[in-house]
Length: 526
Image (cartoon, rainbow, N blue to C red; front, side):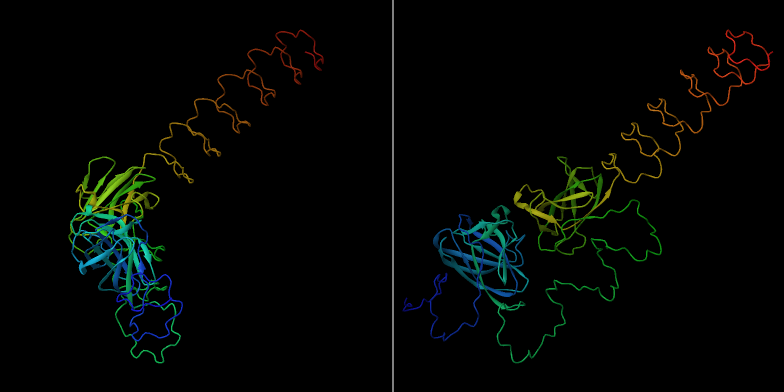
């Protein structure tokens, strides 16, 4: 094919899908002073979602300069478009103009849904590791976007920049969160230039420089971006002063040597390891956080809630509310909330003058963290206390902090009895016998014998005969006669004569002679 006779004054918004087969035989007489960088695509799906405004933020993975945006509009028309920016993430600044800077304000020929409308904004420099928010506004035409997964979640990225899901805006800086739709993902792209990068080139130079740098870095200041790989060895000397904030997590190894002196004020109850909530450091915050917990194994008492704030602000008012089921809200001055086994309990922490830090969760009401005694569930962020306006609710949110609690005694027996019985017997025996008797009998007999005889007698006789004879003689005589005859004769003689006569005859004749003669006469007749 033949090239055009006259080149265009403006470059095409979309490059050719079929580049020239042969490169130019003559290089450009005015080469670009900057290399070109592939744009970062946002959402590329075509749909019918749109609003007058779109808000989002990006993160720089190198030092970059944002130069333009490509967007799609609902219809083809000419109208005003404004672009605003602010450092950091836009959260809590969706409905007010504080901190926003105008970087583009022109009447633009908007090209509709089939072709991108290019917005060459004033250059915005974003340092490596920093976030930057943008707000594109068109009062006469909808800006197209898609539905996102979670507001603030990473949506697309390349080697130098990251793009995060944002929100749609129905009215500019109206002060009303009902004008915000989240999550939303702008359909379009971001163009930028890389000023400098800490990352090595994907294709390093074929020819290194002939001379090293004439002035190597001599900075004594710490890095603005600390290392992601901390030292494997601790510092040679410990800190001269203890931390003003104790660690949320105790040491895995106890002290090598215990304290020389015991505490002058020992605890009245044992300590229980607190339940960590979210531990992520981030920039999400609101004036309130609401969540609920569940007591999973026994009755507990919530004693304190530790949380982080946006700034260090002394003497600020903080309120904590709690409720169970449908009961009336109770205002707590001293946190001491009992939760029975298996019950849920909700909490609402509110500070009108200071932001309470939280992270973006996955799904409101999902289990987030737990230990042996308590479960903690994802909640919401609160922008206005009990306003009746759901626009003041940010969901899902996870409070950054910790719950402290005590385990209380319970009247309910354990479902799993202990493998180690107590060393002392119960003060009072159970009212019902055991379903399974002990396999090992006691070493000492009971002081009080049972009132009913055993259904099954022992297999062997007692080692020591009873001190007291039976009150009733046996109905059947013994098969083996006694080794020791009684000291007194029977009151009534036996009905049957002895099969073996006495070896010694009586000294006195019988009162009544026998009816039958002896089979063996005596050797000494009377």
